[in-house]
Length: 117
Image (cartoon, rainbow, N blue to C red; front, side, top):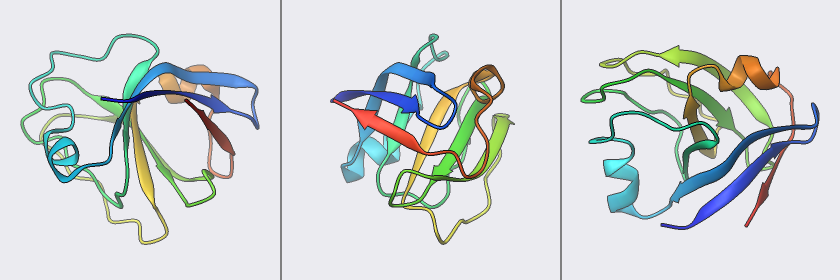
């Protein structure tokens, strides 16, 4: 799976150094299922996506919804296992991160992100 670096250019912070990219039907369907957790500086960028669930997961995650310009349009800190997010029509992708990443980087709605290969 391809990995990217994700920066919050608005806050000059790094959201993750090794973010996996799920852009095939299979990789989007599997997502983080089967994993026991997320290491610091890792995560999953799901393209395209407008909603996610944590059914079958064993750990909570922070979730960012991004528009097509990589701008944060919704934040969902600490999505616990066996939950679903709402549907965000304006979202083009979702970034799943370790719990605390949103707070650690002060990421909020309107922030612009940069995706580097």
